[in-house]
Image (cartoon, rainbow, N blue to C red; front, side, top):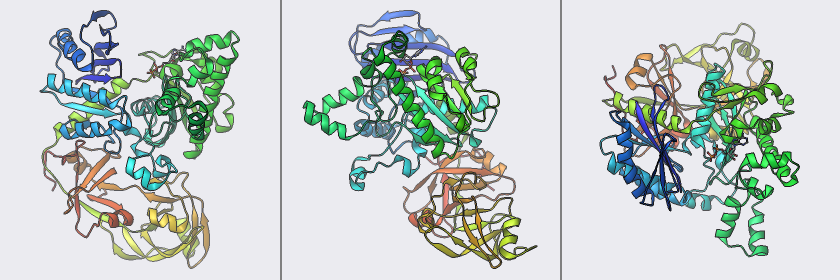
Amino acid sequence: MNILVINCGSSSIKSAVISTETGDRLLVMDIERVLDQPTITFNQLEKIDCSHTGHKDVLAYSFPLLLERLKSTNLDAIGHRVVHGGKYFDEPTLIDTNVEEKIKELEILAPLHNPVNLEGIKISKSFFKEIPHVAVFDTAFHATLPRRAKTYALPHELMKKHNIQRYGFHGTSHDFVSKEAAQFLQRDIKELRIITCHLGNGCSMAAIEYGRSVETSMGMTPLEGLVMGTRSGDIDAGLLVYLQEQEGLNANEIDRLLNKESGIKGISGVGNDMRDVIEKASNGDDQCRLAIQVFAHRIRKYIGAYATVMGGVDAIVFTGGVGENSAMIRHRCTQRLDFLGAMLNEDKNNDIQLNKDTPVEAFSWNHSRVHLLAVKTDEQLSIARQTSKLIEKDLKVNSIPAIPVAISARHIHLDQETLEKLFGKGYQLTIKKPLSQPNQFAANETVKVIGPKNSFETVRILGPVRSKTQLEISRTDEFFLGIDAPIRESGKTENSPGCILEGPNDRIQIKEGVICAWRHIHMTPEDAQIFGVEDRDIVDVKMNSEDRSLVFGNVLIRVSPKYKLEMHIDTDEGNAAEITRGATGVLLSTNGEARLTKKKLK
Ligand code: ADP
């Protein structure tokens, strides 16, 4: 597909027509100084002055020029970068008037970005009427942040009233470079814990656990976290009050100070361009040296924190103008991380030259357990790919099959060794009743589960025995037991907490295995083909209930010839959704409409 990607910034517009098959740019159009003295540049060579000003008029003037240069190349869709998707958008979305209204509603959360993003969408839609328009959100990738990571410790009601939470940004870049890293390492991203450091003018980091963002350094706004070109990143919030009182600064002045005058520019006194600061530092400028030290120290601090959040790390990725190009900054951020298993190779680090043909390079020793990587980011290509993926999926589909929904109560799977410890040597489970998934059964046997706070006397064992012991509980159960269990797909028990189990024969401590089951749909490969999904895709499911508005987001697809089509949710979710026997749901396409498929389910 050929996708026109449009990124409307506050004073510049970056756009490109990209072939998603090859990743090639068929045409690049950049517009600088949109508000006062616009210049349109095609393919970084041909410059055209524009006498109109403002995003709307400048784009209206430039689109015919773009089409002239495209000649006979067809456009399949337009992908628009939108900074804030708030609580509404956690994936690329086809733009209709409802979506436009939501982007507008979110302007208050991103006053510098969403209004111009929306203006770009409106004028593009009126010019390119026949092609689908897709919004790709900077915040979407971080929609998987768990509650504990996205909640500020502020009064609950106030946060609810203003939708205050940590949203995170640069999602397209974190998503893109983590996937590039996994591909480079020839590993499935769903097996890796990656820390990504996007260091450009704006800087942010993300902890990406098995493909999902679980922590990120930017918050409600792009001000939180790392030291940036002109932004302070983390500071003591008490300072705002202090500055108000001592300097008499008002809200606008404080906003300007923290966003425009701080960061590398503020500390160095030189400016926000890292190259200048590095040069002055090497000539002995103490403020520039300090700026670099504070910058790298903050990143190291976050690396440590994120490795802890994920219970370990497999790769640390550097990207963005600074992360891709500055060996010195990469060195400062990753030296003395041997204790983490990350061993910096100085020579490799100094030799890195990323380009289109070599977009990823490692700078750790071959025997380093943690891979250190520099990865060239390409947000435009990522937007183009996400746009084409959505369009392709939408083209695939044409009827509405229903998925039966079942509620799983807390239960435990045991391995043979644990079963024998609890029930005696050579013990075999006995069948109480078969479950809906073929060959699975609820056993007559139960165990007592003991947590630090409370215990459950009888937790049903599900058979047959498995290769790993795994206790699946709900959020409410977690609180009751006093165990903080991660949301995981079945079988992924690495680094999860343990608990004490008691059976008739013995009481034992299991080291790991307590998880909160990720809501999922079991289906056969034939079903998967009909739905147009693959194993471990993540989808939304809308419940066929009286209340048509109920949607379960973030549902994991599990495909195996052994499965029967069924969605599993836990008791908390079932109760909250008032799910009753015989409930069904439908898979949603990404624009919130029912997903349509080619064939009817048997
Ligand atoms: P943006 O966040 O605006 O997309 P970029 O990712 O393009 O920014 O990064 C811009 C930053 O990268 C600038 O501060 C620039 O100084 C820095 N940079 C580019 N090349 C180098 C280099 N060789 N060494 C250090 N910093 C560099």
